[in-house]
Image 1: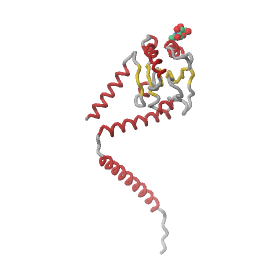
Image 2: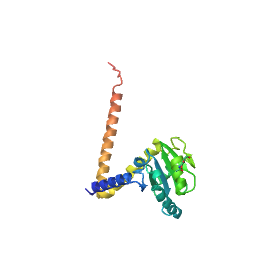
Image 3: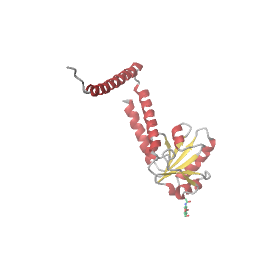
Length: 205
Ligand SMILES: *[C@@H]1O[C@H](CO)[C@@H](O)[C@H](O)[C@H]1NC(C)=O
């Protein structure tokens, strides 16, 4: 029951942050691809312990209120927490800025002033396009799949925490899974042996 209430609240939060303009959205592996992959999106990777990032945040606030970037989703990723997202974008310093535009990813190499970031967004100044390879490009199927798996992992961990399933409940589920797997293996062996059985046999009369 609580689980469904939580998920409705979570969904409402995601939707609200989705449609709120002039705000900086916090991204996780669970909402990254939904909110950022297929639209104009500026992503900042930061770390909570990086005090310089906090100063840059005031520039981001300034930026998010300027009319030229109204249609742009401005978002942040806690790079110290979400390591896979950090690896996905090959982030090796905080803060790092990326622009996702027309299914391409650009790294920002200019200085962290609101007007410089604005011309990065509008005119792609100080931009470095990321290569389009399977492993090199953050929007590739490879990285999307990895993020999806991480999201499933987070969701199931939350489910187990919220369900208050007793330990023997988990053991019970494991038993059922084992029985199903064994039955499947048994069926496969059966099919294999039935093919063997069809070998022509020599009759010695
Ligand atoms: C983008 O470039 C155009 C033409 O050079 C310029 O007029 C405009 O101010 C630039 N926009 C930003 C946000 O720097």
